[in-house]
Length: 218
Ligand code: G3P
Image (cartoon, rainbow, N blue to C red):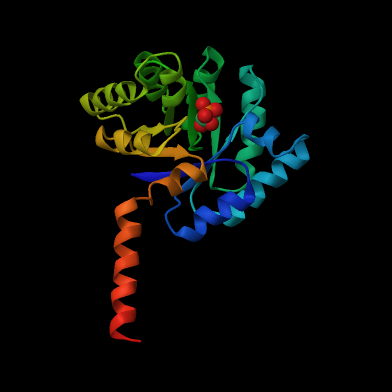
């Protein structure tokens, strides 16, 4: 399973990269705004800074909602670095743009996926990744992990190479459950990635090992 970090915070991205388990980054307009990154030039510069830290795919989202605007913005983003993956929304115009970029050999991530039908359409349009939002489905009493499993099965039935990127990951069990059903990638905040580390028996066991070592090596 690939691990992406879902943030535009450079310190968090550096920390996850230093851990040695980071395969890529996803961002979205809300995450960029949270870091106070506004204005086209600053946004482009920020993506460049992320590309300089991480060796992997970096999803950069377009803000345009029309096909021509998406193409213009996506091409500009793709020029920053070959690590850039153009992130496009699951809309009629977004599907057309997925097809356009896939024919040009530019990687894409289709975002705001909430149903298997949407994921099927994105795969047919040649998306590199689809991003079903697990946490936001759970928020409305719908099983987000079940959607991941459904999409994984559909892609396997037809041999689609589109990767299932479980997004809107809120806690460590989401990561484990998505891994169990075969998600190719998960993207979550640093806190959730680090939460995978924790187990009280690990802490207790280490404490005892250290105490016993000290007894033998005063
Ligand atoms: O990658 C999509 C993700 O950022 C959405 O997460 O927590 O805002 O639902 P959340």
